[in-house]
Image 1 (cartoon, rainbow over the protein chains, first blue to last red):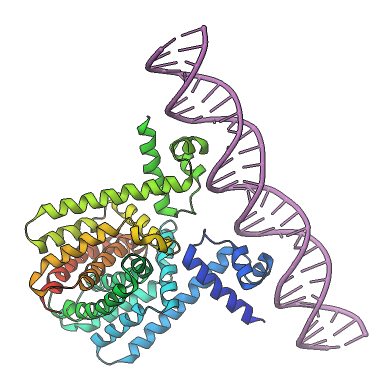
Image 2 (tube, rainbow over the protein chains, first blue to last red):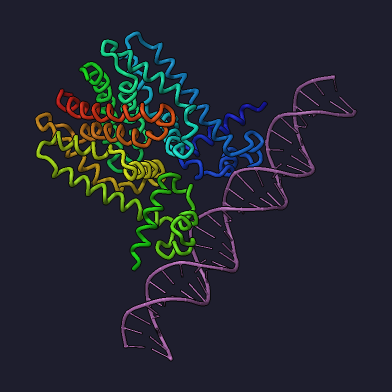
Length: 199
Length: 199
DNA sequence: TACGCTCCCTACCGAGTGGTAGGTCCTATG
DNA sequence: CATAGGACCTACCACTCGGTAGGGAGCGTA
């Protein structure tokens, strides 16, 4: 019961973990933000790791949902890919937040990478590979080529998303908004040109 | 004096910070790795922040040195850009390590972003803008367009670098090596096509 | 010999960490 | 009305954190 408190816990913890990282946030801080004591939190998730894991899982699930939606959004594979990346690049607050968190996960995951065969993003990437391969079937891209290509765009989008706040402070909000526009434009160009003009 | 110990301190701390993040490493852990006590470390850098700052500064300086070298490596602006990104993408251990650390900095910097006008990467980015603009002068790219473009490639390269270890665990080392080859190939194609085929 | 300086140590501090033990209140069910 | 269990509390545990105080060994200089 009280799934409400549980949700709020996840929401706020997600935000804090995204901003400060796993070691940068104490469960006491999270709890107090929700209006609980540390032990109130531990009542729902009996360790810090469990809480963190639940958050990553939730994000991963949502990501795959969005990916499935993108698959059904259009008939044209190229357009599908465009929409997919456009959705990823959307500078929503929660989107930026989650990208930050996943980026941190990717960095921290390095240590425990041994168990990464079953990494939560595996199905996400597998689907990405097939999406890319669908765009230009005549070329018969290998899985490696497709992933290399899809990962470049993924990196471009994610890196830009987590940079915007810093860039804004550096160059001013207006300048960065201009960049955001150019960014998407450029991205779509890369998607279409990159895949249609041979290896 | 004893610049030797100081260097070893910086080297090892850089490695640990890159792997586990600022809050993930204690100065005691760093010191013991070097063969010192915590207080031996504090003799050289009288706070954790100072140590971390020195590391970021050192990386930043080296990056700009490499950038300057790239500028003098070739006469052709496009080729210059190619070499520049190729150098960034080199999967050296130290290169990967430093990319990880800088990525973490970028994530953590969000909180203290207010003071980012003088961020250590500012000159690096400014130079990048002019490098991109040099490639196709006839088009007269705006600064925003140039940065959007340069940043996409920057993100693609950096994101891929920090991902390799996880990807290897997921898809196997052989597959990822294949991707690395395709990655550079693809990157160069993006550099040339992206800039020469109109907005 | 005396002095001061660099390098590095042991001992210690206050604050904060994740987690446990045990209890109280509230509500739903019998 | 009794009881069981979920939700949440206070109090506390053992431990780690970054940082300070102070001292000692080895050195160069006077």
